[in-house]
Length: 227
Image (spheres, rainbow, N blue to C red):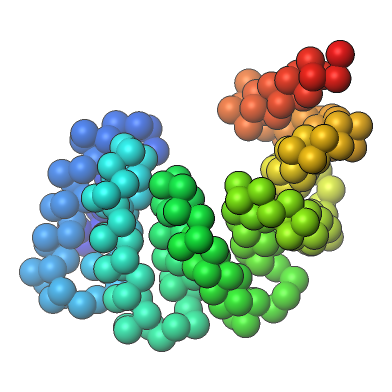
């Protein structure tokens, strides 16, 4: 229980941006768990993921990578290849590779995570929509726009059906698709989507929420381009 409390406190500090306080707590939790549970246990993998996520937030990508890899391998060995925690770990590592610009390595991980989620949750689930969005964003970063667009649209339709049309997650998908249209020079289509996204974000998250501010800036930038 002590290790879990330390881990949770570390996660809280991380969410507040107090990284220097979070790091020793994550490390203590990991050490206690290793002593109690041995080196091979799902809780160890959770600790490795937590510490890796902290290093990622701090921009220490080289420290994060081996920890994410260890956690992924441990989850696969302990839980089998088709488990939600494996999908989450794949996403974590893929996200890190994207930040490092290693898109070719991120792609198979995102694809694998999507397949696992489809098998576990069916083809129609909010978590599947999130994975579609992740893969779409990756293709957009790689300038593979023709592959990104249908994935964004699938994710958007799924979220609208499953969550309702005014969910913050819908705003996120609208924003992603709008940015894609901007990349392609389809400014009128992009503007309409930014307007919808901003309306939802202001309604559901408030005017000063970081996501709302980001969408508003995107819309303003687009209108400057169109002038």
